[in-house]
Amino acid sequence: MRRYLLLTSRERVGTIDGINLFFGALLGANLGTLNSLSLREYIAFILFLAGTVMALRMISTSERRRFAIGFVAFYAIVILAMWIIPDLQPRGLPEADLHRTLATLAIWIGTVVLQEAAPVLEDPAQAASPRT
Image 1 (cartoon, helix red, strand yellow):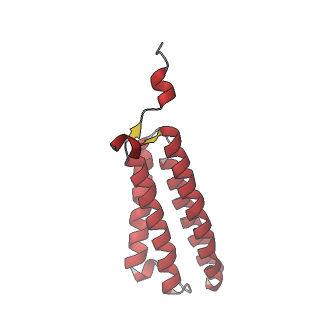
Image 2 (spheres, helix red, strand yellow; image 1 turned 60 degrees about the vertical axis):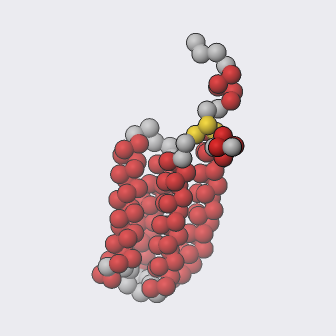
């Protein structure tokens, strides 16, 4: 039964692509609430969001796994700090909007990390072909 719950490496890539597509669209919907930020705060917040998205894409594509995991961990800590420490929160953004955006990023990070950590079923095509 466990074998039917495992994904092949290609299925995992598809799953992560789907997760990224969904959360990217959800993040885009959350960006509609940023119109109350000053230009400086807007630029800083967009750079933060861009870095987080890059870290998420990196963890599923990088050959340097420790570097990618460290990069994602850094952004997870920044998200937690922005949630907890009022001085790190962008001025002018309603707290509820900020928390929704941070929750979106935190859940996105969690789903990608869980998917990356899940065991992968050996690709049946590769298993059937003789190794040379």
